[in-house]
Length: 452
Ligand code: FAD
Image 1 (cartoon, rainbow, N blue to C red):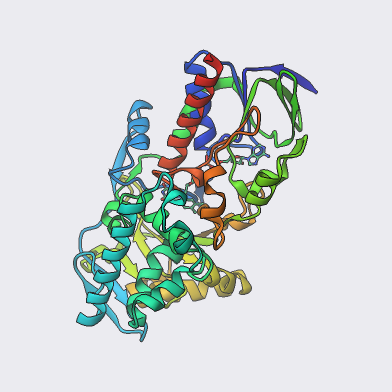
Image 2: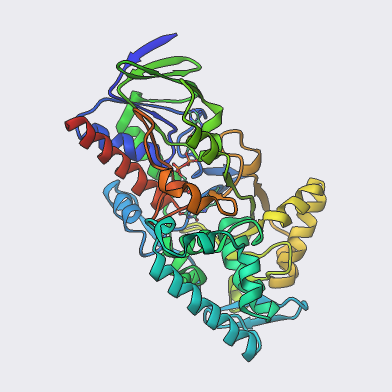
């Protein structure tokens, strides 16, 4: 087995790890990035399936995600806008389908007012608490020990309003049921995107994509790093030494002065730490888990919904398929729809055989967009829960009470070992932008420490 010497070993060639490596190298430190998979990009993955280019993982960029946008430009990549002309579709809890303009669901005046009131409260909390240290706020414990579902039912007796607000945060973002995470966690999610209103506004949140695919960001950085990115090398052990740390991967060992664990927290325990991590980290890491969502891709000969004056944007909080969007590739004559089946609905969908699941999912597409949706030429389900080196989607959040209890410690290095992934970001939390930010911030911390 080859043994190499570097200043910093980075575990994971996702967006965070690659950005950390890029900045460390620019600061004059030598790096090795060890990646378990046979590809870079982690939770961003652009793949051609049955002749269709699909974004299997993260893809959208919002206007405020400036770290990612600047990186995309720096790497010479281009962006394009999501198709959004025409009306959206809403399928109410009673099954009634309606088309509408704007970003407010066509609900009754009372439900609409309740939704606006709850959005106002959540916007106020997000502004007051912020994304960088939600655990430090005087109300942190109070808000972290009540689930979003319980809080919503105490805040409003309008069930449709609660279901819709819950939809944005639970199924739509944290991909866990709203009884499984706290209001503080929901507020962090909202604050990390600027406000709760931003999360509700799909035109803002799902604004742009990278031409050729989001994975190109990681591929471009990996090309710059060359042989310092080593694929097919799951790190099995991180041994702390007098000189720093030794990373033992399947085919290579790296002796380094620092290590960056650029993997989601649910995977930390896949690595043997010698000596073991402190009690606090052992405990904390057991309270961080990934949500679950099936990202469904359906490609059609034409974007038929556009001819009918529809944007392709559909919300149906009570159906298996909760959200649908036009995801047609740049310059493509075919039309692509993407949809999401989150948390407990994903559990139910996975109980079905593949053929039956496809039938049920496409039936939901047809409820929103008509019978033509039943016959895609390409159909594919992104199943990140089955990916050994991810195990869920989109990202990690704490269980009830975990954020205020452990959040302040999640970035504390253990000796020479640092922690960096989008799951731990403040701004851009759970997003590719957050992975860029935390990767770069971690590199800056190591450079500063090294200069001392
Ligand atoms: P990862 O990308 O998970 O990188 C971690 C890397 O570490 C992986 O490559 C993994 O293989 C590797 N690894 C793990 N364990 C080891 C080990 N022991 N040894 C070596 N390597 C290891 N974000 C957006 O901004 N917009 C979106 O539209 C969006 N949609 C999404 C849709 C889906 C289906 C998913 C899954 C995610 C989506 N996200 C989106 C979230 C976004 O993709 C992630 O937040 C981001 O890509 C995470 O980057 P990361 O570098 O922090 O972690």
